[in-house]
Image 1 (tube, rainbow, N blue to C red):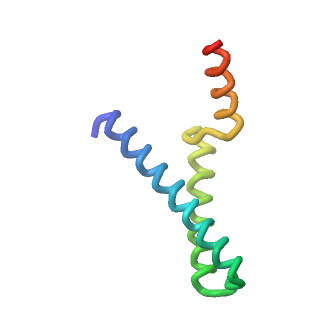
Image 2 (cartoon, rainbow, N blue to C red):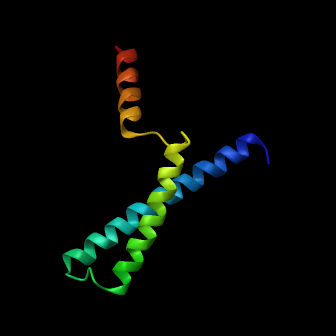
Image 3 (tube, rainbow, N blue to C red):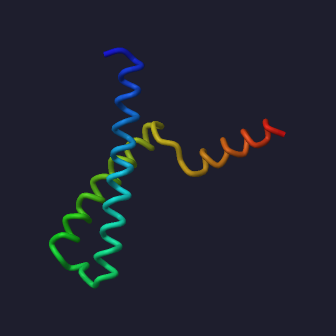
Length: 83
């Protein structure tokens, strides 16, 4: 597999992990609002969310995922260049 293909695969995987994390968070919020935070479904979602959170933390540890601060800095630099 070439480097560009590997990078594209990584980007797809990262997007999938981020989307799954957001979906699990949303479903958990709905269950909490319905008073169902003690259900097996909610507990399974929590386990899945923790697994995804750990994956995202590892990406960040190895410098493969930008932090909010890094994104904000980049946005500020881009805005400064436009002026």
